[in-house]
Structure formats: structure tokens, C-alpha cells
Length: 508
Image (tube, rainbow, N blue to C red; front, side, top):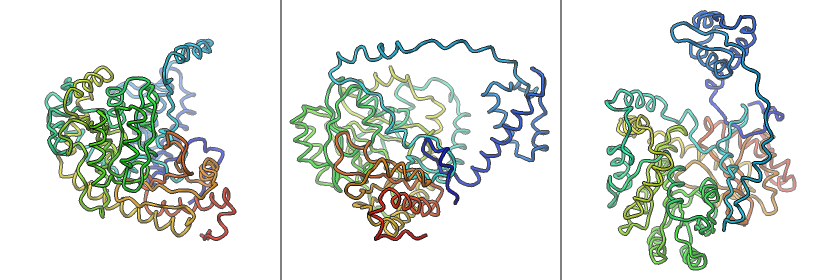
């Protein structure tokens, strides 16, 4: 597998399947041909038909359609339904751009009055979202590779949803009842349809929950390490994240109780199942303790149950959500379909009981009105179809296989990277670097070698105890790409940590 052009690497990479890469390349090549050719046409003159372009360039109709769409977006071509494509009229000369430096003062003027200045920093989230050039193995992705996504089932569900009576009407503010009922059954316990709000994915639900439960300037307890997207939400809302360490059995109850007493916090955010990034599962005895400690502190627990549907084949029975064991309304539950489907299938749920539910509902309405009804209807069609359990079983088996492939490759080629816990769910491994390792240098060296990895630093709200990497095995095309990515990471370690590599196997 050839290495990438290092000069082109300025963002993280998405490793795509060969068929998809060929299609993308064909679209780009055809768009470039047409971009040159259209200059010979007068404004308003008609271009050759799509059929003529298919025959001339020997590409598929889809490639022609996408290439024309690209030129339309660039303002080079205009399309008219039933008439074809035409060269666009010349654009008006762009106006002079004014001086925007005044905004620096305006955006920071009120910061001195805030107890905790708001800080909007998306860098920790972008490590798994940025679109990179081809050729880099993506060990930093946070979503399933296209070969694992249920694209056909999602397409069929969306098609059926669009034909449902009333599918394009305004939905209930809380979400359509049948989808809320499905989420309530998935959560279990005493949670009912009336306790559930449909959200636009997990990130939106977490944002609503934090805004509802903590005023600006307040402390909020978080696991350490934890999901950078949640830390970004908290800081953007002017909240102060207070770390509580986790181990292989989840958050440590004694330290959680100490943190509540010391900080006066009224919110604790946790991921009890396959925690991101450690993969830990909250132990049974700790589950009861966490709920008791929060209740005694008069606090809420925001349960981010983000990856329950990405359990591995060998996991065994899963514990229920904390919300299912909470009769007193301590837990605000967040879950989503996105991780198990596609980054664009942004449908999730908030579940809560008591007066807090009305506050959650009000904030969500003010922020987003509602989740588009066609997407909700498509979600209901998908989870009610025979394809849904088949998809989950297939992903469960494939994630186990990929996890084992990455674990074996790391043990063989990179034994100096410590892997304290091998999870039975989720899509990544959390590895500790040798003492004294330069984490940013290794991340940069890995990218030069052609593999994108996620640094550990953004997962800590305070100083990290050691350097770490998070390595995803879900965003790559398969086991062969995992082996190649680990080989490249070996090369980066040899470059950045040469004194560590002498006793390891660097062959291959």
C-alpha cells in the first residue's frame, strides 16, 4: 500500500474502500475535464447531454451527475430540469472585504464578567471528523467505515419513510410517539414513552442536558479520561469540568463522593458501558454506589449510553442502562443510533423523569424546534425492519474480528505500547505510551508515515498522568488495513522513539 504524499497531509485521513476511491477519482477527473472544456462555450450555451458524456468519457451516469453537481456548486454550470446543463453567466465582481479585526474586541468584551469564560474549541472533536487526503490509514475515526454501514437498509428505510402519509408534516415537538416508544423499550426499567425526547444525535442531546442541569460558571464532574466532545460542550457553556479518575471497573466511587463534596457540583457525566476512551464497563457494585452518591449529593447523572449497539460478539449479556435501575429520576439518559449506522443518521434520544424533563424539552425546542420528521420516520422504518438485527449481528462479529486483529498486531510489532484493557464493545483501543514519550511528536510522525492516530491529551480535563493514543479499528476497510496501519505506526515509533525500538521487531 503506497504511502501518502506528505506535503498533502494537513488534516487527518479517511481510508476508503478501493471501489469508493475509484469512483471519487473518476468524479474529480471528469469535473476537471469539463471545467476546462466549458470555457469554450458562451454563457448560457448548452453542454453535451449526460448520455453523451457517459459515452464519451466511458464513465457511469452517477459519475456524470456528481461531476456536474460539483461544477454547479462552483457556479460554473447551471442545470435546468428537463433541458440539460448550461454554462453559467459570469459572476459579479466580488466586493472588497472589510476589516473584521473589531470582532476580537466584541467577542471578548464580556469574558471578564464570566465566572468561567466560555471557550469554544472543536480541536478535540475534529480529530475524528476532519476529511483527509487519500492514502492515510484512519486509526482516528469515530464512525463505522462505509463497508460496515447499513447503506442499503438506510436507503430503503428513507424511501419507505418518504412515502408515509404525513411524512413531511411537522412532527410532535417531543418526537413521533412510535420512535419514542422504541427508545423507551430499549432503555427498559420504568422508562415510558412519555419520558423520552427525540434528539438530533448524541452530541445534541448532551448539549441540551448540560444546559438544562448546570448554570454557567458551575462545576460539572466528568470521568478522567473522557470524550473530548463532551468537554468541548461543557467549556462552550461556561462550565468547569472537574475530573474523577476511572479504572478498568469504571469511575471510582470514593473519589466521586470526594469530588461532589469538594466542588459542590450537581451534575456527573459518565459512560457506564464501554467508556470512551478506556473501554471500561462500570462494575455492578459501583453502579449502585454511583446512583447513591449522586442522590445523596442532590445531583443528576447524565448517562451517555453512546455505544451499546456496537457490542462485540464475545461480550456476553450486557448490564442495563443506569436509567433502567433508577426509580428516583437521578439519571438523564442519552442514546443514539448514529454510531451503529452512519455519521449522517443523526437520531438519538433523551430520557428523564420528573420536572427536569420539561426543562430538557423547553431547551431542545428553543435550540432546534424538532428533529425533521422524514429522518424520524426513516429511523422507525430502519429499526423495525428485519435488516436491523442482521446488521447489528454482522457488525458485532466484524468488530470482534477487527479488535482481535489490532490487538495481535500491536502485541507483535509494538509491545512497548501498553494495552491495559481489551474491551468487548466499542470501536477502539486505548494504549499508553512509554514513560517520557513525546505524544505530539509521535502523532505527527505517524501522520508522516501514513497513519492517523488520536492523541490522548484532549481526553483529559486536567493534566494527564501519562501519554496515550486512541486507535480506532472501525473506520478502516478491514483487517489488511489494520495490519498496514500498525506497520506504519511501528515506523513512526522507530523515528520518534528510536531508543525504545531496539528490542522490538521492526521487520515487515
